[in-house]
Amino acid sequence: MLQEPQTSSQEQMGNGNNSTQQYADIGIEDAAMDNDSKTDTSFSSGNCAPKTQESQEKNTPAATDDNAATSSDDDNNAHSQDSTATIYQDFDQISASAARGDKDAQIALGDMYKDGKGVQQDYKVAMDWYLQAANQGNPVGQRRIGYLHDFGLGVTQDHGKAMQWYRKSADQGDAQAQCNIGVLFRDGEGVPQDFSKAMEWFLLAAEQGNPDAQDHIGGLYYYGEGVPQDYFKASEWYRKAAEQGDPGSQSNVGGLYRDGHGVTQDFSKAMEWYLKAADQGHPGAQSNVGYQYRNGCGVAQDFPKAMEWFLKAADQGDAFAQYHLGGMYDEGEGVDEDVSKAMEWYRKAADQKNSTAEYLVGYLYQNGEGVPRDCSQALEWFLKAAKQGFSQAQYTIAGLYEYGDGVPQDIEVAKEWYLKAARQGHEEAQTRLDNLRRYESDFY
Image (tube, rainbow, N blue to C red; front, side, top):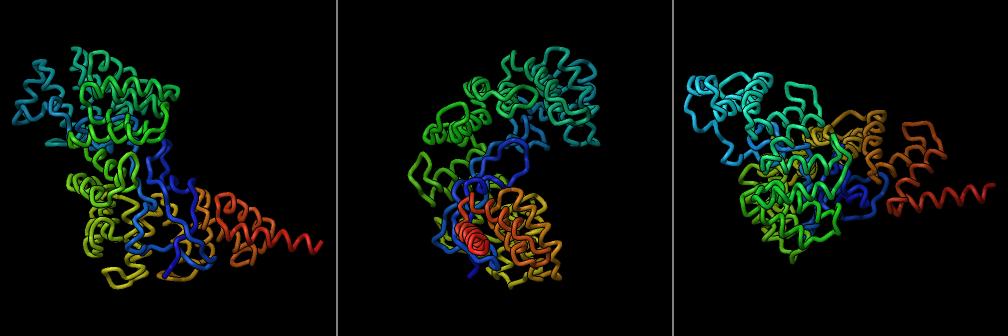
Protein backbone atom coordinates (compact mmCIF):
# COMPACT_ATOMS: atom_id res chain seq x y z
CA MET A 1 0.00 0.00 0.00
CA LEU A 2 1.32 3.43 -0.92
CA GLN A 3 1.82 5.89 1.88
CA GLU A 4 0.34 9.34 2.39
CA PRO A 5 3.02 12.04 2.37
CA GLN A 6 3.62 14.10 5.45
CA THR A 7 1.84 17.40 5.37
CA SER A 8 1.54 20.45 7.55
CA SER A 9 -1.13 22.98 8.40
CA GLN A 10 0.29 25.23 5.70
CA GLU A 11 -0.34 22.55 3.08
CA GLN A 12 -3.86 21.87 4.23
CA MET A 13 -4.97 25.20 2.81
CA GLY A 14 -2.69 25.19 -0.19
CA ASN A 15 -4.59 23.74 -3.12
CA GLY A 16 -6.08 26.92 -4.51
CA ASN A 17 -4.47 29.78 -6.34
CA ASN A 18 -7.08 32.45 -5.83
CA SER A 19 -5.86 35.65 -4.28
CA THR A 20 -8.57 35.41 -1.66
CA GLN A 21 -8.29 32.78 1.04
CA GLN A 22 -9.89 29.44 0.22
CA TYR A 23 -12.03 27.78 2.85
CA ALA A 24 -10.39 24.37 2.88
CA ASP A 25 -10.72 21.23 4.90
CA ILE A 26 -8.71 21.11 8.09
CA GLY A 27 -6.53 18.21 9.11
CA ILE A 28 -4.81 16.19 6.41
CA GLU A 29 -3.61 12.95 7.93
CA ASP A 30 0.16 12.55 8.17
CA ALA A 31 2.35 9.50 7.66
CA ALA A 32 6.06 9.22 7.06
CA MET A 33 7.10 8.04 3.63
CA ASP A 34 10.27 7.17 1.80
CA ASN A 35 11.63 9.42 -0.91
CA ASP A 36 10.64 6.97 -3.64
CA SER A 37 7.07 6.43 -2.50
CA LYS A 38 4.04 8.42 -3.49
CA THR A 39 0.79 9.65 -2.06
CA ASP A 40 -1.64 7.08 -0.71
CA THR A 41 -4.70 7.72 -2.82
CA SER A 42 -6.66 4.74 -1.57
CA PHE A 43 -7.18 5.48 2.17
CA SER A 44 -8.55 2.82 4.47
CA SER A 45 -12.22 2.61 5.30
CA GLY A 46 -11.54 3.81 8.80
CA ASN A 47 -9.70 6.91 7.66
CA CYS A 48 -12.43 9.55 7.47
CA ALA A 49 -10.36 12.60 8.28
CA PRO A 50 -10.39 15.24 5.55
CA LYS A 51 -7.55 15.35 3.05
CA THR A 52 -7.25 18.21 0.61
CA GLN A 53 -10.86 18.97 -0.23
CA GLU A 54 -12.47 22.30 0.54
CA SER A 55 -15.12 22.00 3.21
CA GLN A 56 -15.78 25.36 4.79
CA GLU A 57 -16.02 27.41 1.66
CA LYS A 58 -15.31 31.09 1.49
CA ASN A 59 -16.86 31.93 -1.83
CA THR A 60 -13.97 33.40 -3.72
CA PRO A 61 -15.60 35.68 -6.30
CA ALA A 62 -15.65 39.25 -5.04
CA ALA A 63 -19.41 39.36 -5.12
CA THR A 64 -22.56 37.48 -6.05
CA ASP A 65 -25.29 38.10 -8.54
CA ASP A 66 -28.40 36.21 -7.79
CA ASN A 67 -29.04 34.66 -11.20
CA ALA A 68 -25.58 34.86 -12.72
CA ALA A 69 -24.35 31.83 -14.56
CA THR A 70 -20.77 32.97 -14.01
CA SER A 71 -21.04 33.21 -10.25
CA SER A 72 -19.63 30.42 -8.11
CA ASP A 73 -21.05 31.91 -4.94
CA ASP A 74 -23.79 29.32 -4.75
CA ASP A 75 -26.66 31.73 -5.36
CA ASN A 76 -27.47 30.82 -8.94
CA ASN A 77 -30.76 29.45 -7.65
CA ALA A 78 -31.72 33.14 -7.51
CA HIS A 79 -33.80 35.02 -5.01
CA SER A 80 -37.30 34.85 -6.38
CA GLN A 81 -38.02 38.55 -5.98
CA ASP A 82 -35.35 39.31 -8.58
CA SER A 83 -36.27 36.67 -11.15
CA THR A 84 -38.20 39.19 -13.21
CA ALA A 85 -37.57 37.31 -16.47
CA THR A 86 -40.12 34.71 -15.41
CA ILE A 87 -42.86 37.36 -15.51
CA TYR A 88 -42.53 37.63 -19.25
CA GLN A 89 -43.24 34.85 -21.71
CA ASP A 90 -41.36 35.92 -24.83
CA PHE A 91 -38.56 38.14 -26.00
CA ASP A 92 -40.81 40.48 -28.00
CA GLN A 93 -43.01 41.19 -25.01
CA ILE A 94 -40.01 41.87 -22.78
CA SER A 95 -38.40 44.12 -25.39
CA ALA A 96 -41.60 46.11 -25.92
CA SER A 97 -42.14 46.60 -22.21
CA ALA A 98 -38.48 47.53 -21.66
CA ALA A 99 -38.64 50.10 -24.47
CA ARG A 100 -41.65 51.67 -22.77
CA GLY A 101 -39.55 52.16 -19.63
CA ASP A 102 -40.74 49.20 -17.57
CA LYS A 103 -37.91 48.74 -15.05
CA ASP A 104 -38.64 45.09 -14.40
CA ALA A 105 -38.62 44.37 -18.11
CA GLN A 106 -35.35 46.24 -18.51
CA ILE A 107 -33.79 44.07 -15.79
CA ALA A 108 -35.26 40.94 -17.36
CA LEU A 109 -33.91 41.86 -20.79
CA GLY A 110 -30.52 42.67 -19.28
CA ASP A 111 -30.52 39.28 -17.58
CA MET A 112 -31.25 37.53 -20.86
CA TYR A 113 -28.29 39.19 -22.53
CA LYS A 114 -26.03 38.68 -19.51
CA ASP A 115 -26.80 34.97 -19.28
CA GLY A 116 -27.27 34.31 -22.98
CA LYS A 117 -30.77 32.94 -22.46
CA GLY A 118 -32.83 33.17 -25.65
CA VAL A 119 -30.35 35.62 -27.15
CA GLN A 120 -26.65 35.79 -27.96
CA GLN A 121 -24.78 36.59 -24.75
CA ASP A 122 -23.71 40.24 -24.80
CA TYR A 123 -22.59 41.91 -21.58
CA LYS A 124 -22.49 45.37 -23.14
CA VAL A 125 -26.11 45.18 -24.21
CA ALA A 126 -26.95 43.83 -20.76
CA MET A 127 -25.18 46.84 -19.25
CA ASP A 128 -27.22 49.23 -21.40
CA TRP A 129 -30.50 47.78 -20.16
CA TYR A 130 -29.35 47.69 -16.54
CA LEU A 131 -28.33 51.34 -16.82
CA GLN A 132 -31.77 52.30 -18.02
CA ALA A 133 -33.32 50.62 -14.99
CA ALA A 134 -30.67 51.98 -12.63
CA ASN A 135 -31.21 55.52 -13.88
CA GLN A 136 -34.79 55.13 -12.70
CA GLY A 137 -33.48 54.26 -9.26
CA ASN A 138 -33.97 50.51 -9.55
CA PRO A 139 -31.74 48.81 -6.92
CA VAL A 140 -31.51 45.51 -8.81
CA GLY A 141 -30.26 47.29 -11.91
CA GLN A 142 -27.71 49.14 -9.80
CA ARG A 143 -26.51 45.89 -8.26
CA ARG A 144 -26.31 44.16 -11.63
CA ILE A 145 -24.09 47.00 -12.93
CA GLY A 146 -21.89 46.60 -9.88
CA TYR A 147 -21.60 42.90 -10.60
CA LEU A 148 -20.49 43.47 -14.20
CA HIS A 149 -17.80 45.90 -13.02
CA ASP A 150 -16.79 43.51 -10.24
CA PHE A 151 -16.09 40.65 -12.65
CA GLY A 152 -15.06 42.70 -15.68
CA LEU A 153 -17.93 41.42 -17.81
CA GLY A 154 -18.21 43.69 -20.86
CA VAL A 155 -16.20 46.35 -19.06
CA THR A 156 -12.75 46.67 -17.54
CA GLN A 157 -12.78 45.05 -14.10
CA ASP A 158 -13.03 47.78 -11.50
CA HIS A 159 -13.84 46.91 -7.88
CA GLY A 160 -14.08 50.59 -7.01
CA LYS A 161 -16.87 51.17 -9.52
CA ALA A 162 -18.47 47.96 -8.36
CA MET A 163 -18.50 49.33 -4.82
CA GLN A 164 -20.11 52.57 -5.97
CA TRP A 165 -22.96 50.78 -7.68
CA TYR A 166 -23.41 48.24 -4.90
CA ARG A 167 -23.62 51.12 -2.44
CA LYS A 168 -26.41 52.81 -4.46
CA SER A 169 -28.37 49.56 -4.32
CA ALA A 170 -27.50 48.77 -0.70
CA ASP A 171 -28.61 52.21 0.46
CA GLN A 172 -32.04 51.29 -0.82
CA GLY A 173 -31.98 48.16 1.31
CA ASP A 174 -31.02 45.59 -1.32
CA ALA A 175 -29.77 42.64 0.73
CA GLN A 176 -27.63 41.06 -1.99
CA ALA A 177 -25.85 44.36 -2.62
CA GLN A 178 -25.21 44.69 1.11
CA CYS A 179 -23.76 41.19 1.08
CA ASN A 180 -21.57 42.00 -1.92
CA ILE A 181 -20.16 45.07 -0.16
CA GLY A 182 -19.31 42.83 2.75
CA VAL A 183 -17.41 40.51 0.42
CA LEU A 184 -15.39 43.41 -0.99
CA PHE A 185 -14.40 44.50 2.54
CA ARG A 186 -13.65 40.91 3.54
CA ASP A 187 -11.38 40.33 0.57
CA GLY A 188 -9.90 43.83 0.38
CA GLU A 189 -10.97 44.40 -3.21
CA GLY A 190 -11.47 48.05 -4.13
CA VAL A 191 -11.21 48.95 -0.44
CA PRO A 192 -8.74 48.18 2.37
CA GLN A 193 -9.47 44.78 3.89
CA ASP A 194 -11.66 45.24 6.95
CA PHE A 195 -13.33 42.22 8.54
CA SER A 196 -15.30 44.38 10.99
CA LYS A 197 -16.91 46.35 8.17
CA ALA A 198 -17.48 43.13 6.30
CA MET A 199 -19.35 41.78 9.30
CA GLU A 200 -21.47 44.95 9.53
CA TRP A 201 -22.61 44.62 5.93
CA PHE A 202 -23.13 40.88 6.16
CA LEU A 203 -25.33 41.37 9.22
CA LEU A 204 -27.48 43.96 7.43
CA ALA A 205 -28.09 41.46 4.66
CA ALA A 206 -28.45 38.47 6.97
CA GLU A 207 -31.14 40.24 8.99
CA GLN A 208 -33.16 40.29 5.78
CA GLY A 209 -32.68 36.55 5.45
CA ASN A 210 -30.00 36.65 2.76
CA PRO A 211 -28.42 33.15 2.75
CA ASP A 212 -25.15 34.27 1.16
CA ALA A 213 -24.58 36.76 3.96
CA GLN A 214 -25.47 34.18 6.59
CA ASP A 215 -22.97 31.80 5.04
CA HIS A 216 -20.26 34.47 4.99
CA ILE A 217 -20.86 35.29 8.66
CA GLY A 218 -20.44 31.61 9.39
CA GLY A 219 -17.14 31.76 7.54
CA LEU A 220 -15.87 34.71 9.58
CA TYR A 221 -16.61 32.83 12.81
CA TYR A 222 -15.16 29.59 11.44
CA TYR A 223 -11.82 31.21 10.67
CA GLY A 224 -11.84 33.85 13.40
CA GLU A 225 -11.63 36.75 10.95
CA GLY A 226 -12.51 39.98 12.77
CA VAL A 227 -14.13 37.94 15.54
CA PRO A 228 -12.87 35.27 17.94
CA GLN A 229 -12.91 31.86 16.27
CA ASP A 230 -16.14 30.15 17.30
CA TYR A 231 -17.20 26.91 15.60
CA PHE A 232 -20.52 26.88 17.43
CA LYS A 233 -21.50 30.32 16.10
CA ALA A 234 -20.21 29.30 12.69
CA SER A 235 -22.51 26.29 12.76
CA GLU A 236 -25.49 28.47 13.74
CA TRP A 237 -25.00 30.81 10.80
CA TYR A 238 -24.21 28.08 8.28
CA ARG A 239 -27.37 26.28 9.36
CA LYS A 240 -29.51 29.42 8.87
CA ALA A 241 -28.42 29.53 5.24
CA ALA A 242 -28.52 25.76 4.81
CA GLU A 243 -32.11 25.57 5.99
CA GLN A 244 -33.01 27.99 3.21
CA GLY A 245 -31.62 25.47 0.75
CA ASP A 246 -28.29 27.18 0.07
CA PRO A 247 -26.07 24.35 -1.26
CA GLY A 248 -22.75 25.90 -0.23
CA SER A 249 -23.96 26.23 3.34
CA GLN A 250 -25.38 22.72 3.33
CA SER A 251 -21.96 21.48 2.28
CA ASN A 252 -20.39 23.52 5.06
CA VAL A 253 -22.72 22.02 7.66
CA GLY A 254 -21.68 18.63 6.36
CA GLY A 255 -18.06 19.60 6.91
CA LEU A 256 -18.80 20.62 10.48
CA TYR A 257 -20.35 17.23 11.26
CA ARG A 258 -17.50 15.41 9.55
CA ASP A 259 -14.85 17.32 11.50
CA GLY A 260 -16.76 17.67 14.78
CA HIS A 261 -16.46 21.46 14.73
CA GLY A 262 -19.19 23.12 16.79
CA VAL A 263 -21.20 19.87 16.71
CA THR A 264 -20.67 16.28 17.75
CA GLN A 265 -18.75 14.46 15.03
CA ASP A 266 -21.18 12.37 13.01
CA PHE A 267 -20.24 11.03 9.57
CA SER A 268 -23.80 9.92 8.84
CA LYS A 269 -25.14 13.44 9.41
CA ALA A 270 -22.25 14.79 7.38
CA MET A 271 -23.35 12.60 4.51
CA GLU A 272 -26.96 13.76 4.85
CA TRP A 273 -25.93 17.40 4.46
CA TYR A 274 -23.45 16.70 1.68
CA LEU A 275 -26.19 14.89 -0.24
CA LYS A 276 -28.59 17.84 0.14
CA ALA A 277 -26.01 20.06 -1.54
CA ALA A 278 -24.81 17.43 -4.00
CA ASP A 279 -28.35 16.83 -5.26
CA GLN A 280 -28.43 20.53 -6.16
CA GLY A 281 -25.30 20.09 -8.25
CA HIS A 282 -22.79 21.56 -5.80
CA PRO A 283 -19.41 20.18 -6.99
CA GLY A 284 -17.64 20.39 -3.64
CA ALA A 285 -20.44 18.45 -1.96
CA GLN A 286 -20.50 15.88 -4.77
CA SER A 287 -16.80 15.41 -4.28
CA ASN A 288 -17.24 14.96 -0.54
CA VAL A 289 -20.00 12.40 -1.11
CA GLY A 290 -17.57 10.54 -3.34
CA TYR A 291 -14.91 10.75 -0.65
CA GLN A 292 -17.26 9.33 1.99
CA TYR A 293 -18.19 6.41 -0.27
CA ARG A 294 -14.57 5.79 -1.16
CA ASN A 295 -13.55 5.59 2.47
CA GLY A 296 -16.70 4.18 4.05
CA CYS A 297 -17.36 7.27 6.18
CA GLY A 298 -20.92 7.16 7.49
CA VAL A 299 -21.83 4.74 4.71
CA ALA A 300 -20.68 1.34 3.50
CA GLN A 301 -17.57 1.63 1.35
CA ASP A 302 -18.69 1.61 -2.28
CA PHE A 303 -16.17 2.31 -5.04
CA PRO A 304 -18.71 2.45 -7.91
CA LYS A 305 -20.78 5.07 -6.07
CA ALA A 306 -17.61 6.97 -5.19
CA MET A 307 -16.65 6.96 -8.86
CA GLU A 308 -20.13 8.15 -9.85
CA TRP A 309 -20.03 11.15 -7.51
CA PHE A 310 -16.42 12.04 -8.26
CA LEU A 311 -17.26 12.09 -11.98
CA LYS A 312 -20.18 14.46 -11.37
CA ALA A 313 -17.90 16.85 -9.52
CA ALA A 314 -14.97 16.39 -11.90
CA ASP A 315 -17.17 17.22 -14.88
CA GLN A 316 -17.74 20.59 -13.20
CA GLY A 317 -14.00 21.08 -12.85
CA ASP A 318 -13.61 20.10 -9.19
CA ALA A 319 -9.88 19.47 -8.69
CA PHE A 320 -10.26 17.32 -5.58
CA ALA A 321 -12.59 14.95 -7.43
CA GLN A 322 -10.20 14.81 -10.37
CA TYR A 323 -7.36 13.97 -7.99
CA HIS A 324 -9.39 11.16 -6.43
CA LEU A 325 -10.39 9.74 -9.78
CA GLY A 326 -6.70 9.56 -10.57
CA GLY A 327 -6.18 7.73 -7.32
CA MET A 328 -8.91 5.21 -8.04
CA TYR A 329 -7.42 4.38 -11.44
CA ASP A 330 -3.96 4.30 -9.86
CA GLU A 331 -5.09 1.77 -7.25
CA GLY A 332 -7.66 -0.12 -9.33
CA GLU A 333 -10.53 0.71 -6.99
CA GLY A 334 -13.79 -0.28 -8.71
CA VAL A 335 -12.02 -0.03 -12.06
CA ASP A 336 -9.16 -1.81 -13.77
CA GLU A 337 -5.84 -0.37 -12.67
CA ASP A 338 -4.75 2.08 -15.37
CA VAL A 339 -1.84 4.40 -14.63
CA SER A 340 -2.29 6.23 -17.93
CA LYS A 341 -5.85 7.20 -16.96
CA ALA A 342 -4.61 8.02 -13.49
CA MET A 343 -2.14 10.43 -15.04
CA GLU A 344 -4.90 12.05 -17.12
CA TRP A 345 -6.95 12.79 -14.00
CA TYR A 346 -3.98 13.83 -11.89
CA ARG A 347 -3.00 16.22 -14.66
CA LYS A 348 -6.48 17.80 -14.74
CA ALA A 349 -6.25 18.44 -11.00
CA ALA A 350 -2.62 19.57 -11.22
CA ASP A 351 -3.51 22.08 -13.94
CA GLN A 352 -5.78 23.66 -11.32
CA LYS A 353 -2.85 23.86 -8.92
CA ASN A 354 -3.88 21.01 -6.65
CA SER A 355 -0.52 20.51 -4.97
CA THR A 356 -0.94 16.79 -4.23
CA ALA A 357 -1.79 16.15 -7.88
CA GLU A 358 1.18 18.25 -9.00
CA TYR A 359 3.42 16.08 -6.87
CA LEU A 360 1.91 12.88 -8.27
CA VAL A 361 2.32 14.03 -11.86
CA GLY A 362 5.98 14.62 -11.04
CA TYR A 363 6.25 11.20 -9.42
CA LEU A 364 4.83 9.43 -12.47
CA TYR A 365 7.23 11.28 -14.77
CA GLN A 366 10.13 10.46 -12.44
CA ASN A 367 9.32 6.76 -12.49
CA GLY A 368 7.99 6.45 -16.04
CA GLU A 369 4.58 5.22 -14.93
CA GLY A 370 1.84 5.89 -17.47
CA VAL A 371 4.19 8.22 -19.35
CA PRO A 372 7.77 8.00 -20.63
CA ARG A 373 10.30 8.75 -17.89
CA ASP A 374 11.22 12.45 -18.00
CA CYS A 375 13.36 13.87 -15.19
CA SER A 376 12.99 17.48 -16.32
CA GLN A 377 9.18 17.19 -16.32
CA ALA A 378 9.32 15.48 -12.94
CA LEU A 379 11.36 18.31 -11.45
CA GLU A 380 9.06 20.91 -12.99
CA TRP A 381 5.99 19.39 -11.35
CA PHE A 382 7.73 18.76 -8.04
CA LEU A 383 8.69 22.44 -8.00
CA LYS A 384 5.09 23.51 -8.65
CA ALA A 385 3.93 21.53 -5.62
CA ALA A 386 6.90 22.58 -3.49
CA LYS A 387 6.26 26.27 -4.15
CA GLN A 388 2.77 25.79 -2.73
CA GLY A 389 4.37 24.45 0.44
CA PHE A 390 3.81 20.74 -0.20
CA SER A 391 6.44 19.23 2.06
CA GLN A 392 6.76 15.85 0.34
CA ALA A 393 7.60 17.62 -2.92
CA GLN A 394 10.21 19.70 -1.09
CA TYR A 395 11.66 16.55 0.43
CA THR A 396 11.75 14.81 -2.94
CA ILE A 397 13.52 17.74 -4.61
CA ALA A 398 16.08 17.70 -1.83
CA GLY A 399 16.75 14.04 -2.51
CA LEU A 400 17.23 14.68 -6.21
CA TYR A 401 19.90 17.29 -5.47
CA GLU A 402 21.53 15.24 -2.72
CA TYR A 403 22.07 12.26 -5.02
CA GLY A 404 22.29 14.07 -8.36
CA ASP A 405 19.28 12.25 -9.74
CA GLY A 406 18.33 14.05 -12.96
CA VAL A 407 19.97 17.26 -11.72
CA PRO A 408 23.58 18.22 -10.93
CA GLN A 409 24.44 17.06 -7.41
CA ASP A 410 24.34 20.02 -5.04
CA ILE A 411 24.38 19.34 -1.29
CA GLU A 412 23.74 22.98 -0.37
CA VAL A 413 20.60 23.11 -2.48
CA ALA A 414 19.56 19.76 -1.03
CA LYS A 415 19.92 21.14 2.49
CA GLU A 416 17.79 24.17 1.60
CA TRP A 417 14.95 21.96 0.42
CA TYR A 418 15.26 19.56 3.35
CA LEU A 419 15.04 22.57 5.65
CA LYS A 420 11.85 23.83 3.95
CA ALA A 421 10.22 20.42 4.41
CA ALA A 422 11.52 20.00 7.96
CA ARG A 423 10.09 23.36 9.00
CA GLN A 424 6.67 21.96 8.12
CA GLY A 425 7.17 18.94 10.33
CA HIS A 426 8.46 16.45 7.76
CA GLU A 427 10.38 14.10 10.06
CA GLU A 428 12.36 12.28 7.39
CA ALA A 429 13.52 15.61 5.96
CA GLN A 430 14.76 16.63 9.39
CA THR A 431 16.63 13.33 9.72
CA ARG A 432 18.30 13.75 6.32
CA LEU A 433 19.23 17.33 7.14
CA ASP A 434 20.75 16.30 10.48
CA ASN A 435 22.73 13.55 8.77
CA LEU A 436 24.14 15.93 6.18
CA ARG A 437 25.11 18.44 8.82
CA ARG A 438 26.68 15.71 10.93
CA TYR A 439 28.65 14.43 7.95
CA GLU A 440 29.93 17.92 7.18
CA SER A 441 30.90 18.46 10.80
CA ASP A 442 32.79 15.16 10.93
CA PHE A 443 34.43 15.78 7.58
CA TYR A 444 35.63 19.25 8.36
